[in-house]
Length: 252
Length: 278
Ligand SMILES: Nc1ncnc2c1ncn2[C@@H]1O[C@H](COP(=O)(O)OP(=O)(O)OP(=O)(O)O)[C@@H](O)[C@H]1O
Ligand SMILES: [Mg+2]
Image 1 (cartoon, each protein chain N blue to C red):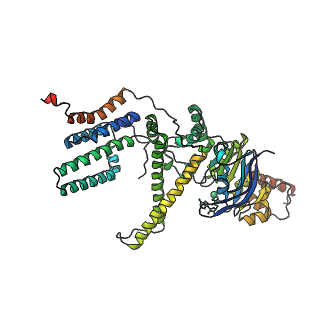
Image 2: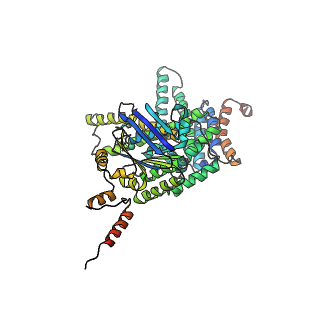
Image 3: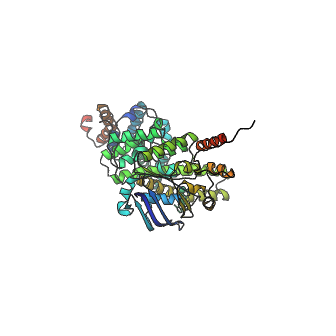
């Protein structure tokens, strides 16, 4: 479950598109999507976006496995909200729940696909160019590193346990299993904490002082990048504007 | 005499209360090759962390090239002293090998072109050029160790400190490391290593520091590694060449050989002096 930032994966159009443009478009898309109230519009946007991903060579199947848990979580939350509304006797509780879920789904899909297609370097660069403060960029960087350390330590501990003949009990309440799981979690956090401290010390000893220096400046985004970004953000914005009734005079 | 490192009565206690250093006093000459030896837990790594201000002295003092290490000038000290950590997983964290090696030079504000040159040189030195674009996590442990070494070579510090650089290296890489350290030293750098490899220390170093339980048991030239009371006391073993010559009774040589080659030469010379019987 490492957040790997696949630098060795094949190039595809979506990935080659400039990271800064993608990030800005994603932010506009999400801003529009999270205020759309019509579930048909949301579904249309989502369908269009996934179609766009497929068209530009994005590894949809691989990526879907990654967003499974966030989507599950969003679904559970929306369902809970819908039920609460339903029991409170509100009208359209189901539709409201669907809208809530679709909005969350859209946000997850847009943001995760954009980040998935970027290397760590490109992500840091894009955030920096967009004048995100260093503190925040560092925070994101450290979170990713820490998550990696955590999964790394976990896999090592798992291996070490297996090598010494440990196997899971048949059910969750098997006491020995519970004890091992408890210990694992406790030691995992301790180990990860100590290692992240050492990683930080290693960074310090190579002159790290908190500010981020950009090494590689990717070329300026070109026409293709802007066109793609406009398409990506344009569709949700179009539906948003439509919802606000801007086109009703055409229909009249 | 100019000293690269002067440590006086240094003591250090870890957060959990473990006392790792109990009054270490030692000096490292500028331009020398120093090997620090000692049993597991003797305090070698803890000592090395003091050399670039990662740990600050709790008692006593550490001076680097005449500059006292304290909170105010830890950054300056870090520029002078490059430290390769014992465990490469603590040090190598960037998404690609190239980024990791470039991390130090970038932090010290070098221009882009210079960084590119240095990264290339450093990766070539450890024979990892072809891995520049790979993710460090996908490398073998020994390869990661080499990346960690490259990451510090690229900074070109005046003093190079390596914590157990030999661990996990294959024979060829060990030989390669020998050459790297030799070259860095010839370029005028002071090189300090902590190691369990007595043979390497005996052959490569010109200064030996033996540690035991947070103290310096002995410091001196390589002859330190020929003295039984020190080897026994520190739980080390004699270098192989020394062991071999110790076994030959009644042999007196003015200068003990340091390598297998030198030893062989000496034996050949001795054999020539013995009249052949047939
Ligand atoms: N982060 C830490 N927290 C608590 N105690 C520590 C920590 N690091 C080291 N120690 C303790 O300090 C003492 C010295 O450890 P150190 O790592 O310096 O030894 P070392 O000579 O490098 O050993 P090795 O040859 O195994 O690398 C040991 O007793 C060790 O248990
Ligand atoms: Mg150590």
